[in-house]
Each structure stands twice: as C-alpha cells, then as structure tokens.
Image (spheres, rainbow, N blue to C red):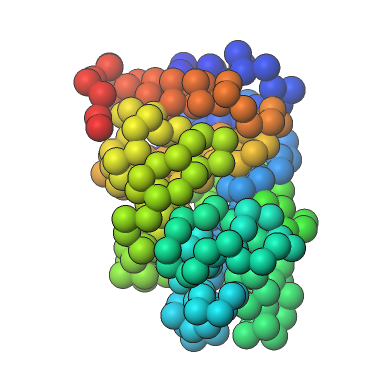
Length: 278
C-alpha cells in the first residue's frame, strides 16, 4: 500500500506501519523486526490479559480494587479517581470523572498479580503473549507503558483484536462498549472531550471529532496511542486495523500525521477517497 510510505516523512529515526484486514495483512512499510517501546499501547495488552483473567475466574470485573469504592472495572475504564501518575491520592470519587491514569493501570496489574499469585509480567505472558506467539514482545517495567515489541508482533496482536480468540465474543463486546457513559475528561496531549468514552481499557472513537484515527474510521473504532509515537486502531465496521510504531515522541505532529495516514490507507483499501465519516 503506497499510503503507508507517509511514515518516511514523519522525522522519526525508525518507523514501521502495517494495515490488516480480516483475511490477513494488506501491506506494511518499514523494518518489521525493529524493536519499539509501545508506550501506552501497552494498555491494550494489559487490558486483554485482565479480560482473560476475568473469564478464568482469577478476578471479577466488579470486585473492589484501588481506592475505596473503586473496582477492577473502574480501573480499566479510567474512572477510579486515581491521578495520571502513581504516587498521589485519588482526585475524584470512583465513577464520577474520566481521569486517564497510568496509576490506575499499575494498581490494576497489582490486583491481577495478587489474585493470580504470580508477577503480572508472567501472567501477561501466559495469558496473551504465549498463546498468540508473540515471542519478541516483552513487558519491561510499567504495565501501563512498558511493553517492547516489533511491528511483526503488533500486527499479530492487532489481528487478535480484529477477530478475538482469547476471550469470548460477549466479553470482548463488553470491553469495547462504553463504560460509565457520559463522563467527560481529558485525553492527554489531545484535549478535553465531553464525553470521553472508554471501554475496558480500550479508547473508543464514538463521536470524538477530530480523532487521532482519522475521519474514515467508523464510530465503533477502538484502540490506543502511545507517547513514544505509536498507535493501534481497530475498526470492526470496516474490518480493518492499522498498527504503527515510531521512535518520535508524541506531539502536535502526530495529530496531523496519524489521521492523514489512516484516511489514506482506508481510501486506498476501498479504491479511492470517500466522504468523511462522523
């Protein structure tokens, strides 16, 4: 796909991108084997491990975890009241605000580790990496932002999100449906949205406009982006996903480049430009 070559213009030392559909990969550009830090795209993997844990009975999504009144569900949906970074006290009552929180995901991983009686990195490996064959993907540090992986592995993970096999369709449908609807909040580096819709670890496009996944993705698109210049979006309506890894720190450039790339690859896959979808 020629549109994928846009990443060469982004000023990153290293960049790799792939587009995939339900039948497999549609095209890629860049070094598929170069290892990147996924940054907050890590949260998608942590969230999927938590869904596996819920189906295995290791945890219950509505059991207490985190600040008083908070549950696993609150932590996954960024509504526990914990602040962005670890170390601080809650800044809101659970369920009242959407506060994007690395601290919440670290608390979440601690809860899974305690219930599973093993380090979270080991559980993540057993629940997600090993079944999918992600042999070059590794959690090094925070379960909110510490996974390192090459594009080749992220493509496999994206395919899993496009057609889940590790959890039931019902569980995945719940995870990609808005949790605690109507809550406003700030998407870091982007701005305030009212509402700021989120699923169980998955950021939902819904009515957000503009959105980092572009104007051609449907309201049902979901995914995550990372501060290291990475993103993965999945659109079940069009049956496609886009995985992109760079080593250029997220900034205003990304909010221009990412939607342009996403729109172009969807146009190319469809055979030409179409009116924007809102």
